[in-house]
Amino acid sequence: MDKAAVHDEMEQARQSFHELLGGASGSDLRRPTAGTRWNNRQLLFHMLLGYLIIRALSWLVRMFDRLPDGVSRGYARLLNAGTAPFDAVNFAGSWLGGTLLPRRWMAALFDRTIAALHRRLDRETDGELARGMHYPTRWDPFFRDYMTLADVYRFPTRHFAFHRDQLTLPRG
Image (cartoon, rainbow, N blue to C red; front, side):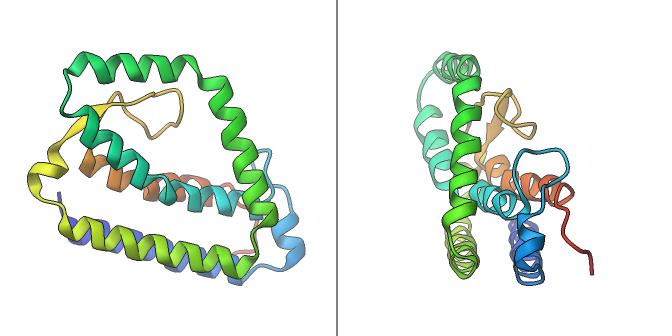
């Protein structure tokens, strides 16, 4: 894994987040998005959430990698079976966070999260980054059946880029 490339991707996403959030008016942020039930502000929070969940996802990789492969495969099947409740919680959490969290708090939280991910990534060894587990592929289009910790670090930036294209904010 090219750690420098992942650091660059995260930093570009951080800068983009600030530009998107800072360049939008209140009415821009309340405008519906293209292809989601969220408004722009709520989708921006959802994009932030993609980075926030990395701590939990990396913990899961560390735990399930130590167990027989069938355990994480079964866990992923169980989570796939619970896609409808996950989707409801995912929607409600992003709606709530994007509705209630002040704009400056969202920006500061994005900064702190990216800084923490930079520090964590720097401490990861090649062996740790090679650990992996099965994931619920129905939960997110960027979850693959089997993902390493290196894949998990790249996930939120792919998620961010996908959703950035659904924003209906002014470009420029």
